[in-house]
Length: 283
Image (tube, rainbow, N blue to C red; front, side, top):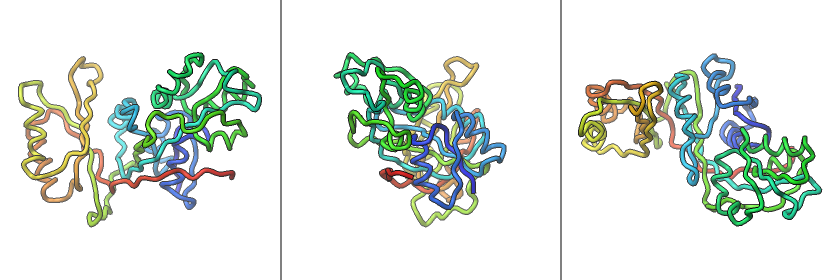
């Protein structure tokens, strides 16, 4: 089986992919999140993995939008512990660093550490490990990158500081994508489902839409709102809830919900993800 992630070798997405898919799966990289969704939709990869939210920096809004646009299904999730390092070339020191490169989410997760080192200017890049590769290729003496310990190992770079994330319980939730929904889900173990919907902008409409779950004692894990493209401040609501969509209570709740929505799409039912710490090492 072939699975893909976006980013360079040593990125947190690659670490998550290896933890989820294991050694029996062929894991390949692409440049952008869009490439992951496109490859899965077209069938050039069986599954893909993308980050969707972080305990410190919040949601990856772009991936919520791509989830809807692509038509891909969610078939799994993984919670990866995130430990950030400040990484530089072999000649670099904390005193010589003037620029810190990384993905915006990683920079946000290390905001307090960066605030305490005001002589270092944050610079956004497309990926954490890509930032490490860039300063290595440039042989930059005045720059460092925020990335995983694995990226430092893979690119043979120097770690100037470890565990610089603000939250020592920092976790990122990754979604596993497939071209179609999971049809062989084991509902004997904890399962969750995801949907996206919208309704008319009238008083009480959101309350009534969520009440269909409350009336049936279905736990809601998360709700995320996103503006509808081209319609100004008209919102779509992404919702994660307990159980599989094929279960009786959940099926009845979704039928009830669709009676009051102007748009509805089922995104997938999947096993509740496990929490893992990445394994680092030479390879």
